[in-house]
Length: 261
Image 1: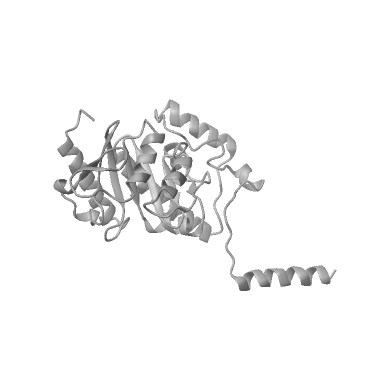
Image 2: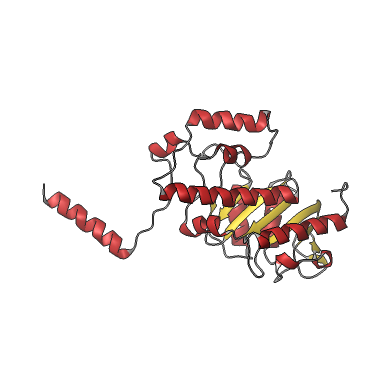
């Protein structure tokens, strides 16, 4: 980070906070942003503060144990950020927010792990769904740690989304991509469902990611994103939620169908 002064990095965090807030990705005191300064020092947003109105003097620093070194008390979710930095030496910034559409998928227990948009496959691979962990606890940090090793963006069950990057704007723009992808996925499902890219095309896109776009980060792991063939073969582990009444109706219909034969 030597090429940019600490004061400039603080201003970058403030600007990302303003963009998150103005785009409706966070409300009130939600969300948090951090930047890795060195092997043992981070810079990040303070706890309990609206990120849309940050000023450089409000940005905190802490060590890799989460202990505040300067400024106000750092975000209570800093352990989640620290787990990312420990798992990913190539990552220098983390953004966590609650964009409504992708958070809707997270609340519904639905990963954005299908090969639908070529641009998303190239830039992110896919966006898996992390298991639920109570915010500000080691549970959430551990849940993120298992997936962030093979993805630059993760949905957090019943919580929100997290993205990483080589610098803070890189991480922020990935959050924009996830929310845009969630909106397109939602619309396509309302229109009857996505038409997924075949395995061969996914392989070509991942190859482009490395050779043409020089993106060296994880492309989503061996099983992600899911191509058309995987979903057709039942490889999609998307959760289905039914009310008690809907479940009873399904069972009743099945019993009547069997009894009528």
